[in-house]
Amino acid sequence: MPGDRNVRFGFAAVATLAGLAAISARNEPEVDWPVLGVTIVCWWIWALAEGRFKWPVYFMSITAPLVVNIVESGTEVSMFILIVGIAAIASFERDRTLAAALAVFAAVATLVLGLTAIDNFGTPNWLFGIGFSWLAGQMAWRYSNVVGELQESRALVADHAAVNERRRIARDVHDLVGHSLSVVMLHVTGARHLVRTDPEEAERALEQAEEAGRRSLAEIRRTVAMLRDEAESEAPAPSADLGDIVNLVDEYVIAGLDAVAEVRGPLNEVDPAVALAGYRIVQEALTNASRHTIGARVIVTVRVEEGECQLAVINRGGEALERTGGSGFGLVSMRERARSVGGSLVAGPTPTGWTVEAVLPMEPAGVRR
Image (cartoon, rainbow, N blue to C red; front, side):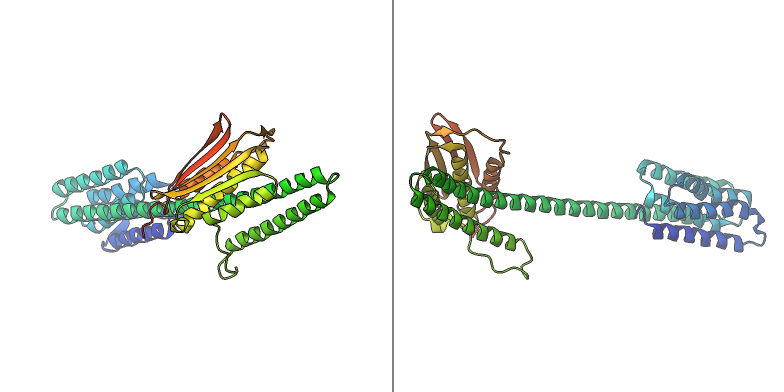
């Protein structure tokens, strides 16, 4: 409700009607106009100025009816302005201690006025009106706060979802592009070394590089298509799984990487989301091995046993290549993929090279069949 101009206009209009009713109920309205007229003007200034001029309104809305009733009897109708003022203060004032203090002051002043100044003032009725208006304003305040918090929470959830989606897209693009370029570069490097001594073998290496590039380009296009609206995109190709790791390693072997794969266990029992995460982890580890070492032997192990999937990519020997300002996003991507399905991953150097090890559940965290 804070900041809602229509609601402020409503309070100002009700205060105006209450003031006019108080004046028209008397035969001699001269006593009422000087105070009630200023009060009504203050209310409209407050409404038009988005509530910035609150102190004149607070002062006049509480004191004006009391002053009018002290000066002249028979003006109880003006107390409606006080009730409207308490409701507005309880609805809009951010300082809740101040709002409560003003309501208590109005109630005490009304009680004193009814006991000392005017007979048959109807004090219980006005006290009930003050209490009711305070409770109604308090409920409006709480409601507006709840609505505001829900809107903020919705915005935070939307932002969080957008961030997670950007991270997922970044991981997919990074894995696809990194893998394809690594395989292509291995073939091109082999062709460069053979171009003088064995032109035919160099030509085959270039053909394999071209084929790998085309496959990767098609996969990237499928991934981009999956990011579009389902109504506009074609059906995506089946996702890679743990059973494709052997073919993945063979692809690197053909490109010149000394690698071997060992796969054991019931791979078909692994959830597709977990299998895809495991495949991407191995893919990124092989990409890093081809980029950062030369002449190393890479051992890829996949075991499905005892209710979990264990992955290991071990680099042994070889010569480390000079790093050229890598961002380290590959390691971050692998850890995020493992955590996304409820698994864990450790990676780091060993006395003989580098090791990446991951333990993944059979099903993503929170999923039960």
